[in-house]
Amino acid sequence: MPSPVPANPDFPMNISVPEARQMLTDLLPAHRGETVPVGEAAGRYLYADLEAKVSHPSATESALDGVACREADTLSASKEIPLRLKVVGESRAGVPFAGRVGAGECVRIYTGAPVPQGADAICPVEQLHDDGETAVLLLRPASRGDVRAEGGDFQVGEVVLLAGQRLTPARLALAVSLGHAEVPVRRKLRVAVLSTGDEVREPGSVLLPGQVYDSNRYGLSAMIREAGADVIDLGHSPDSPEVLAGLIDGAGGADVLLTSGGVSMGKYDFMRDLLLEQGRVSFWKVRLRPGGPAMLGGWRGLPVFGLPGNPVSSLVVFQVIVRPALTGEQPFTLRLRAATPFRAIADKAAYWRGNIQGGTVSDYGKQGSGVLRSLSDTGALVIVPEGRPVAVGDEVEVMLF
Ligand code: AMP
Ligand code: MG
Image 1 (cartoon, helix red, strand yellow):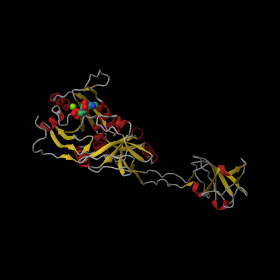
Image 2 (tube, rainbow, N blue to C red):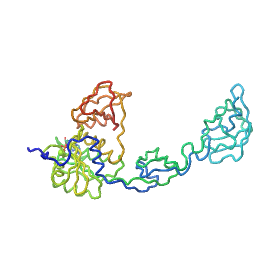
Image 3 (cartoon, protein in one colour):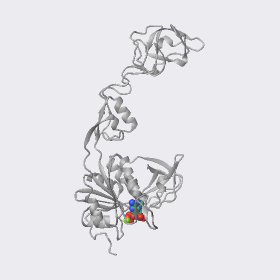
């Protein structure tokens, strides 16, 4: 069989992971923005910085239930010699005390209630005896630390959230507390997905020996949605260049197409042939394992990223190359000590599946690129640089999956 590799390819081959990420990023359209109500913004990416429209706290307030008073009056208070203060009123969250706290005086105060004029400290309810009427006895001095200063969290006008950040639940809650009812977010990218392979079958159908369920299309679709993009599901193609070309032509409106399978060195890897012969190729093969055969190209103006068919390869290539390009976020990694050795590959970065336990990471063992359980059981990719094996006790970079 003649080699499918052209004699003088006019595209790079065997590029590095960062180069592959960058080339895919360069083919994606620039992000555009839209404004959505905060109730619909969870998981979206901010399109612009967000300023605080108000300060928080909006007044100087109490962090505790207790009494508000003047710290200087209470320095001698102790269990043995409690200090008596006169109660002159009450400050509740939403209903402040209008008067002023003078020497030897206090007001009963509740969490989130404004600290009245004159007072600068709080004595918590657990540290006082309250007669329920006009006096309290303090068992320790009141503390300024339990007063939350106006604007202590953020000040009006301060830039608090940044363009490109994802609205996690915490950031979404923060955006609301900054005073935003609507937020500028990136338009979602539309990512078409299709799988290839004569042996690949729909879930629920009867599986004959040699066939395999279409786990990639479902796994990839889930990862696309998790990355904040919309899925256009183009279904599945047999290993037929004509059917494949017809399906790709149906990807109207997509910003990018992800395909599974058919980009390796085999005779029936037609996704590769279509891009080589009738489309465009930006690169072929990336120096990583699993996932080496990945191919980037184009089909009539549509960027096409060909992921390898092996289930682990396909999801790892998405995580390592496609996801960062879609989201603009670098993958999150941490450094851990190796509890087992990890082998290196001479000319490829290896992304071995590992188990994290007690601050160390160990080899999952079954590292075949068809063993999906190696991903679902572990959730961590141990990055072993090209040609540099990891010994027990070495620090390694680990990407959470
Ligand atoms: P390919 O990249 O097309 O040569 O496929 C490589 C391996 O991945 C083969 O064992 C295929 O059966 C398997 N495979 C291909 N496509 C899928 C898919 N959509 N879901 C699960 N496995 C697949
Ligand atoms: Mg195939």
